[in-house]
Length: 342
Ligand code: NAD
Ligand code: ZN
Image (spheres, rainbow, N blue to C red):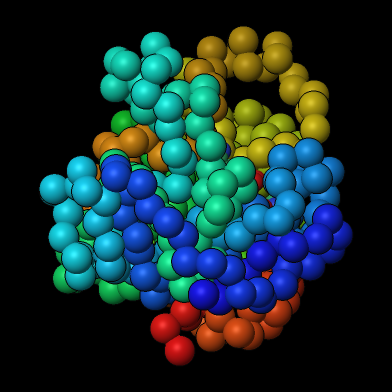
């Protein structure tokens, strides 16, 4: 089969021929239709420090996918051949305290497809049946291929009650923008989203009913005044990984505000802890998706009017993967989809 592989420990990814994955008794074989390129894949392409310390070579990359089941392991009885699906890319252990109490997303032994294990940028993917999430007919493969990052957005956005709340999102990348759409869908009052990249802010305004704020030019305190908010934002979602964005968020929060942090800062980043203490702010770190509550709620919302389709800005055949990565690196794209069916 064709597979987009980290074949050598240097910059780049290469389209290679790989053997068809062999499935175990509890696995399924998925024929991949569409995949999404993630920022993580760009890190692996660039072969930065994180990638060098994390990713084994050779490895088939990619973890955002939609496809259909073409083979079932002998113990798999709840799924069927031909079923359209996406799936959770975090492979969890079953022995930790967290897993045994049903908090699968907190399992410390988690391994990621396309990062630690063979991934989804290929014509076929082996996946434990446990990880499969079936797709209803109303959810097309393009959207199925971005449920992983949409799940990050949903997990973060549902961390705190948003009904009637004023919400600040820092970072209008694909995940920040989708989180804005989710916040609107579940009934937030004002949703402001910041970035320093005008193209990203324009895209945010196309995808969701938000107040875009270019923090290179505009002060968040002026936005608070313009939106006639009394003190500041009730809930924050940090989705840039940028140190200054977190600082600005803490400043713009109301007393007792709640912050969910998904963005990953590049290293240790200093924070004015006294501001956090005196404002009595709650901070929650968010990793991945809740398995499988996030998937359940995400699909239910998509079936009931949540529309994130405009976040997909580019589509390429898998053979044109280089163009896909160029689009991702431009900083101008939303989600970029690769089609493996051609
Ligand atoms: P992205 O890099 O596409 O988007 C980040 C955005 O932040 C960019 O548009 C950038 O211009 C903007 N930005 C930079 N400086 C800023 C500032 N000072 N203020 C406001 N915005 C600023 O990333 P993405 O794919 O949307 O992912 C968002 C973040 O979530 C990243 O940090 C990513 O590493 C992280 N992430 C975490 C998890 C997890 O499980 N915790 C999963 C996926 C992604
Ligand atoms: Zn991803």
